Image (cartoon, rainbow, N blue to C red):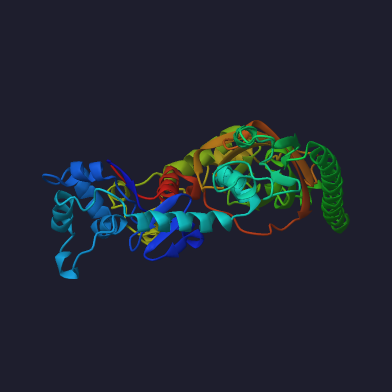
Length: 448
């Protein structure tokens, strides 16, 4: 085994811990150090007759590696035998055959922690994480055979919106259970032993669910339209188009996101800010499942030059590229602040500025995004256009490419305030460097 993943603190609040071990997401780890068990054959290859590079990496990246392996295999030893990084003790125990088999008591503990962890999950979590365990919990006996006494009513299994893979996996498992019936309506699976009860319950539940969703959508639309109408009334006294600006706070509607991530699309917003450059605006957007930054300008050439300048400033210096991965974020921030800024930072040539004096209703857009599920950053700017209805800048329609959604994503927005409701990130928060940091934070430190 050439690679080990140790940084899994993202799930730390979900672990079930007992007797020096912890369990979650089918990971059974020894404490301290959150150490995975390595197969005996792999340990033999790594440590006997001498250490391989894989063994050296494992020891270097987890001080408790040896202690954890011995705990997984139930090996008892005196504390004074574990010296240094424990290599000599591990080799001794391997040669003595002490790690040939996991003791029954450890296997039993793993099974108990697994059951305890899975039992505290909701039905939604079981569908997403381990649908096989869901069947075991609600429809199968200890022998693995169907058990009608466990669940006598209809069980409703919520599915991810427009799910194909996850739904197919769950349905495939349901089909393997003799005499168990299921029916899919919308984003839910209805499961029951009695087909008549299943049909009646599914139709009634689905109809009520649709009515509830429709009422919630109507109430949301009315609330959003009221906020926009209040804004228009407040600004009726404005004197002409010249006093208006794109700057402000907007509420957003996007069908692509609403249909595919309905739970994330209830409060989508966009905040447009002025910059030091005439005709150039920076916007922070929050579309639920993604967030990020947009730069807008009526002149495509000016926009391209402005973004190119920001990208050049975001490129890491030679000193930063050679920094150790363990350097803290604060250290990097300080170093960046000390680096001399390029001349005319964020400022465009005079000629370009003059070309932007006459604002248009149509703006060219460049945007970068962060996916909010795993924190993945898209460092390459997507592009599109945004067209305001009129020079009051109170509403607009846009079409842009969004890496995590699709190409030519359409969305619209209504203005609710001339003042942005919150600040904006820097363009550098979505740079290549930020992308790499996010990857390390998301996946942990791999050795191999």
